[in-house]
Length: 246
Image (cartoon, rainbow, N blue to C red; front, side, top):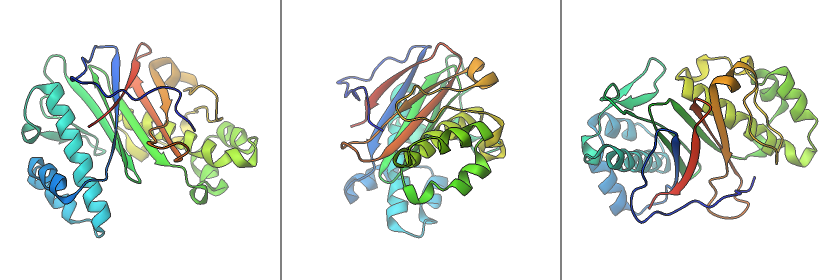
């Protein structure tokens, strides 16, 4: 999957209109000094969660992803990164504790193999997912268990060399949708259908497509790095804009 647009590096923080969904990408590779600066902004609960990771790589990725998320949300909210407070839904989806105020900020985060993607919107729910395309994880057994019958048929009809990409296009689009709903994997993935053929537009079919908009993207920093990403937002009038955090 290749990106067909540029990830912008704005000199000033971009304005977020009611129709816009800002999708940010960032690398999670940082030196220890920057990781320490991120860690200072985290809550006690987040620092405790970081310490529960067995591997240092995973711990550092969590700290960096949360630090970048706090930096971005602080800019949209007009406060300091350490002042951000989260609340969590029944299925663990985070939200800002002041989300009930006028013009609230909604967000979602996903990271995979050194890349984090964060979607931010106003007044509309949003979900995002990114995955490294790994042929060893794109098995027919997993597809048959989680995909709809139509999706499995579409996947099997692809040329062999496109099936791994098709699998992860499907997976990220489904994950983004259930994350936007706030349901997590409790919501059966085979109850709705998405498009998955490489090179074709991302689509949500049926009732989901009537109420939600979807966009697909490649957050890779280098050509052919092999990632798939998707964003789903409430409403049919949303417009995705893509930015690179720095």
